[in-house]
Every structure is written in structure tokens, then in C-alpha cells.
Length: 428
Image 1: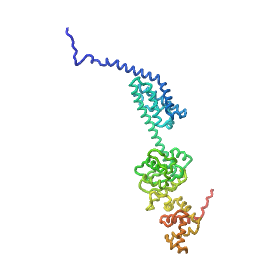
Image 2 (image 1 turned 180 degrees about the horizontal axis):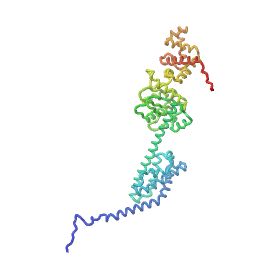
Image 3 (image 1 turned 60 degrees about the vertical axis):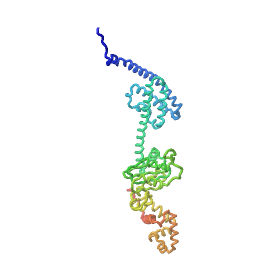
Image 4 (image 1 turned 90 degrees about the horizontal axis):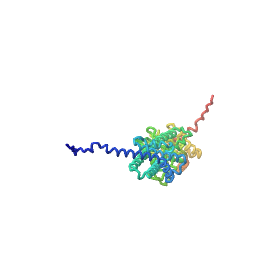
């Protein structure tokens, strides 16, 4: 009888390798099913231990109102249930964030920070790891992988919420600035300002200039915080508008820390914010008592910005009140009223002699001798009266620019004084 000798290159055992792997695969599958069944049995226990651990280790959780604490507990329970489903089939739950964070009400996202959420995830993972310790290395690896995915999912949820909040804040800020510019304020303006987190208090001023090619809004806010100020930013085409207020509670931490230096004037703040604007004129409106009154400063700044080109050597920034003559010539009623009330009437009310001396001095080309001859007084008397004029109204008539402002005020005041009173229309 001839014996068959198997070829050594083709051993008989290698003909059907699946026959040997079959028991191993079956055993692994049975082991996973047993693990899943065990996880489902202890899921309630894990949730209970997790809630207890949260109360013992996280002070912010214990201080929460009962409703929010319950919502956080739901998130932890949803995380455990979602892990069991994911462990059964990792491809069945592509959006972990929807499974876990969908159990929480929307307002929970505003009351629990990202840092607190990561603390919640860490405590939950620690409880699960402690419970499954020593059972299955594959299960521990799955927990680590799932905890990584859930952490990234939490970061994604908060990033999307922050982006939506940023867009909403930008639209609300644009609406507030537009209301200030147009003067169409209503009872809702204070609540809108509060929703933006405005930290300013006291006086407010409006700064108007050109929009740069690339506006860095965050840089503008940081620069303002360094000067203990807060800003509202509005972009209207090629025009950039900043509503400036002094900060109520400066932040003393991090890179934005501010010292205890005395508060800067609005002109000093505007000068340091000047690099954030584009080329062209930069006009600062006068200070007003509150943010609700900012429309008055905005009107002055916008009117000054429209005529700033008529002053050849206008500084940058320039005060809107330094452009009162140009604004008045352009038909700005606020500028006319300001010149009359701040120059003409105070001089007339204080002394007719001072008003006459100032008028003669300006009509005579700011010559002391010619003014003295016309008034039949000594030049020193004219010099003394001009000093008194400066003390009363705050402008020095001996300067060329201020002389223009004072002469415009005298002309406008004289016109207004001799205008016939307007007749009131009688309704039919």
C-alpha cells in the first residue's frame, strides 16, 4: 500500500484556518455581549454614584438650584447610556453631543461653563473606570476613547454657542450704535445696552473717523480696557464710530490688567485709539452725562466729521467743539446754539463792556493799540479786559483759531438777538 506524504510547503493544518479562529471569535463576541449586559445592569448604579461624587467633589454643583442640578444629573446619565450604546456599535452614534447634551435644557449651557462641563466629564469617567477596573482591558480602552470624543463634542457645543452669541452680540451692538447715531432711542435701549455687558459708567463721548482696511475689533477693545474704558463699535461703510465710556470695573487679571492710574480724559483716550482708525479726520464729540444721552455727542461728532476738511491744520483727533464755526456755516443748529449759549450770552450777561471790547478787538485785526484808540482807553486796559473774557468763556481771543470761534459766536448771537419772533401757527 502506498502512503501519502503531505507536502511540507502546504501543511494540512493551514488548509482551513477559520476552523481554529472560529472559537476565538465566538468567545470574543460572547465576552462583549456579557460585558454589555453587565454594563446595562449597573448603569443605574453608575449614575447614582456619579451624582453622589459630583456633590462631594464639585462645590459649584452643590450650590446649584435643584432644577439645574437635576439637569446636570441628566447629562451624566445620558453620557453613561450613550457610552453603552457606543460600546455596542461605535458607528451607531456619530453625533455624541446630540445624545448627551440634548438631555439638558438650553439655559443650562449659559449657566455651566466649559471648564465645569469638563470637570463633569472627568468625574463621570473616573466613576466608570473605578467600577470596571480589572474586568476587561478592551473596555478600559473604549472608555478612554469615548471620554476623548465626548470632551471634543463638549468643546464643539460651546464653540458653536460662543459663535452664535458673538454674532448676536455684533448685531445687537450695531443696532445700539445706530440708535445712538440717529437719536431714535426708546425704552428698550437701556436693556439692550445691559445685554451687551456694558461696563461704562458716568460720562460718554462719541468718536468718529474712517474705517481701516482691516479692522481688529478685539484689539480696539483691549486697548480701551487698558485705559479703563469701554467701547461700543459701529461700522457704517467707510465710517467707524466708537462710543466711549469709562469702565466701571476694570479687570485686573491677565494681559488686560489695568493699574490704578487716574482716569484719562476722552481726548487722551481718543488719541491712543487713533491708530485703530483709517486715514482721514478723526472727530471727538463733547462728553454727555450718560450713554442714553450719547446721541447728542454723536450729532456733534458727525457734524464735525462732515466739515473737518475745511480746517487745513486740524489735529487728529480734533474736538467737535473746535469746529463750531465750520459746523455753524454748514447749517448745524447745534453748533449755532452752542456758540450763542457758551460765548455770546455769558459775555452779554456778565458785562456789556467785555462784549464791546472783544468785538472791537476782533474788528481791528486783534490789534491792542487800534482797539484802545477806538474805545479811548489804555492798551493795558484792553489787555486786562481780554483776560477777563478768557476767564468768563474759556477761550483766548489772542489766538487765531479761537478768535474765529469768538467772532462767529458774536455774529450769530447778534443775528439771533435781532431776529423777529416767529409767529405761531394757529391750527384751523
